Length: 286
Image (cartoon, rainbow, N blue to C red; front, side, top):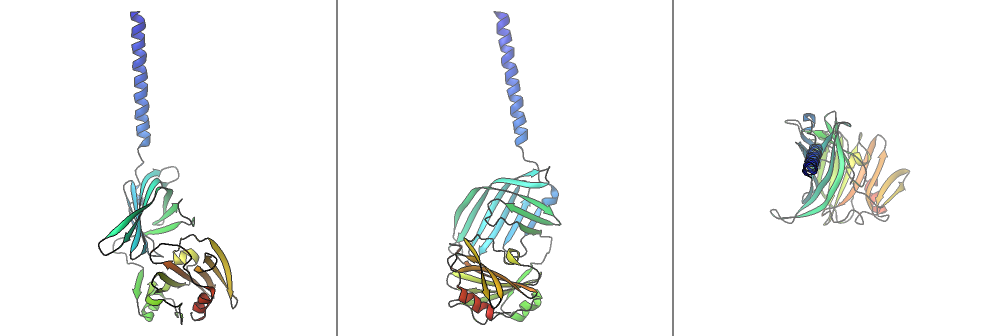
C-alpha cells in the first residue's frame, strides 16, 4: 500500500511539472515579437494630407482627419511577423472624435476588432486594412526631421499654381449654396479648389501624375458606380445612383477629381450633385 501511495504522489508531481512547462511555453508564445527599429518613427499620408501614423514599440497609433471638426484615432496592438517581414495586428480600436465646440467633443467607438498588417519599403509604410471598404492600400511616407508639409493653402490662385506647378482655371460656376473657401497646392503636382455649403464640402482636384483614389484620397464606399458622357468626355461617377459624390475623368495629359463630402461625416452619399451640376462645373474649368 505504501509503495502504491508513493507512486501516486510521483505521478501527480510529474503531471504538475508538465502542466507548468506547458503554461510557460504558452506564455512565451503569447509574447509579441518586438517591432524592428526600421519601422519606428512617424509617417504621414502625402496625397490627401489627412492622416499620420506613429510606430512606437509594439503599438501603432493612427490619426485620420475627415474635417476640421472630426477625426478618427486608431490604436493597433501589433506583432511582428518575421516570416513575411511585416507587422500584423488584430483587435485594433477605432474611435471617432467629434468636436461640438472648441473645448468639448464626443467620442464614439466605431469598432474594436480591426485586423490587417503594415509593411515597409523605400521609407514608405503601407497599410493593408481588412476593415477598409475600398480594399485599397494606403501609403504613408516617413516624416524625417524638418520635412516640409507638401500642402499649402491660399486664396491666391496664382500662388497655388506656382506652388503646385499645375495650371488651373477654376469653374466659372458651382452649384447653388456653395461658396469658395481656399485653393490647395501639393508640391508633388496636385492643385485643388475647395467650396462649402451649409452641410457639404466640394473639392475639385487636378494633377498630371496622380489619378483616381490616389488623387483624391477618397476611400469611401459608394453603393453605385456608373459612367456619364459629356461632349465625348467619359466620366466615372460614384454615389447613390441619382446624386454624384465622386467623379473622375482625364482630359489631355491631366487627371481630374470632383468630390462632395458631408462636413459632419453623417452620411457618405445622398448629398451629392446632379449630372447637370457636374457638367456645368466641368464646362467652365480647365
